[in-house]
Image (spheres, rainbow, N blue to C red):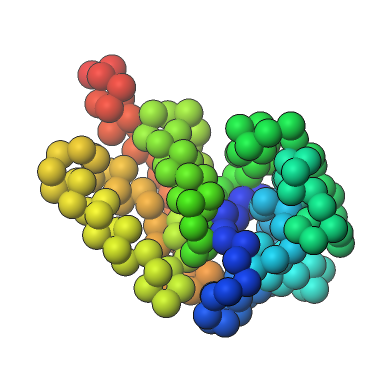
Length: 193
């Protein structure tokens, strides 16, 4: 993994532990020589993850849409900022630039990006690892809902097991580095078998 796309929230009205974890994630990516790809913002966890990477000498590429590319929202100190015409193109560009994906805590946008990424893996559109940085056990309710969907037969166990989760960035990235795409589950899902 040379490039990791981080999905995360942009709210500033959050517990400080989330900001600390985001900055740490950015720092760990830089220390490992991994490029950060993210939504290009300077507020909330977005700004913290970028600052963590940049202050450690890492590379940070932002991908943003024109309406968010403003002085109050866009980070102006990134290695590079790609401006795409809309949200669909933004997500496609982030996917194109990344070897792996990590969701930090966030809201609707983060959930959207996470679920699209997991769905694309489920259907074989990509074979890249996906992880959750589970700060303050933020993702416990979501994981419980996913486990319920597995129990009810809506999600294959192999796809659930492909969603890595840890509260420690190093442990999360180590686990993701060992990822093996569940090709047989994809074939079953796509009814190729």
